[in-house]
Amino acid sequence: MEGKSVLKNLSPYKPGKHPDQIKKVFNVKKIVKLASNENPYGSSPAVKQIFEDRSDNSYALYPDGHASELREALSDQLGVSGDQLVFGNGSDELIQMISRAYLYPGSHTIMATPTFPQYKHHALIEGAHIEEVPLNNGAHDLKEMFNKIHEQTKVIWLCSPNNPTGTPLCKQSFHQFMEQCPKDILVVLDEAYYEYQHSKYDLNVIQKLHTYDNLITLRTFSKAYGLASLRIGYAVANKHVAQQLNIVRGPFNTSTIAQKAAVTALKDENFVRESIKKNEQVKNQFMLFLDDLGWTYDHSETNFLFVKTPVSGYDIEKFLLKHGFIIRPGEALGMKNTMRVTIGTEEEMKELQQLLLTFNKKINEGKIR
Image (tube, rainbow, N blue to C red):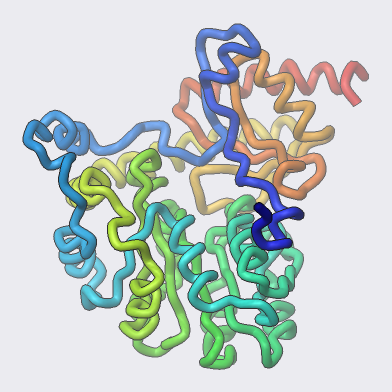
């Protein structure tokens, strides 16, 4: 059986290499994964208690399809109506929902390049025409994206801070873009790393949703909250857009455990705050190291850095894997001679720095070209 013809030209999503796989291939005991932008400090200790308390038969029951408890908790925290929220199996599923609801053969969608690849992936599956606009110094070129709009444009994807570069949108440019953008075009703002950015880069979109009826923002519990394995994210939009996406959404798409963990994680503001503080400290140390090494990087308001490297990111990946460190080569993201590095703990990053010093010495000696 053959599916849609476009599937012949697409591949399944390729996640970062799994630690168990690396242990077998390279015969190393310790693995440090710095490839998927996970929180190295885990999740709130209170979340662990949820698993210990599930001694009843609740696993045999379907989850709350309305995510009532989480909906109420987020509604209170964000100051929005509960029917403005849509929950997904991570932001990934929300992206799929949006594509399914608003894109179709002959429609047109605009996004940056490079950016999170799932925008393009799902748009292509729905038969939409893709318009990609190159980044400008790691950031979205909103003027050029606006110039690409035409009568068939249905969705514009913005990622701030952007993945893989970590660079945020300019607040003034974003609001100017929204004011000029036709109201019949849905603008999707992916804020997966929202919690990590400094307050001066906060676009304040929640407060602007009543002004921008065509705006939807995506956020997740996978990053700063440390719940990546539970797969839960959410969208905030006006009630009409939220209702349309809830029609597309599967009836029981987020698990009972994920919902409960998200509610619990929301309450532990201190854990998130401390995680972000430590991330910032260690990231600044790593940036100073890169400065001394002579390697440059994009401005990042996230828990990762996108680094320009003197050789292929694949060469660096191969070297580091032998020592149990996993990073993301930029070539896998469409950028030559770059790598994306998640900021780990202080100890992990010091070990990484020693390895990069050794690698850079090999480059200077002409052993790696």
